[in-house]
Length: 296
Image 1 (tube, rainbow, N blue to C red):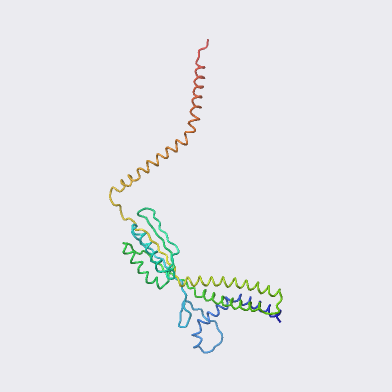
Image 2: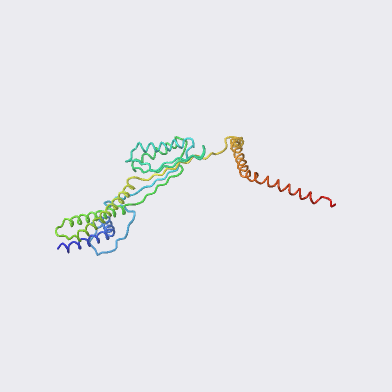
């Protein structure tokens, strides 16, 4: 009896694992259509038209992963202070409300400064803190230049992942019960343990995937881009002269460095070439003097 029952359970388990996605999709559609089906008169089977982005009473809540992107123009002298305040506010809020993923400040010149912040935030907390972002930039003499909000519907992906995980857990329970069955041969036990290891690996993978998707829903992604305000005009008519005087020392040093490099390159050739040229010149003169002597 055990020899017949074991292969049957393994075959059913593999078939259940392979068909999880199709069953999940079917179950998801039936749950959405349940309110309508309750009020309908029994009728023959027919194709149900697909309805997207329609949320009705009793239907599953949509799980949306939001992404926010904001760009600010801030005076250069206050840009780093404003961006670091956001980082400090996030740390004070705690990891359950705000998490800094990346933060950087780039200073190309005193008038060209930029900062970028990537963080994950709890939606309700960020809904209130969003006002603080705008007010802090305005208090520093800046303004918000662009806003972008996007959302990705992860309802189907999370529902499918949960259904697949439940199926794998049921299959693991059945395999564990087979290991405890008396009268199983060594070959059967090895087959069950091999299948149990494969199922356990899929359970861990599915659990991690569903956890990541749910994290994207519970913690929205926010990108903040801070750029320094462009200088409208020069401060005075003597600005070019002041700029030239500022670069004077650097220009002289650069020219002197090029001269030193030229001497360093030509000096070895001069040490060898000058004596050779001097010997050749003397030989040429002697030869010319010999040709000019009068014949006796």
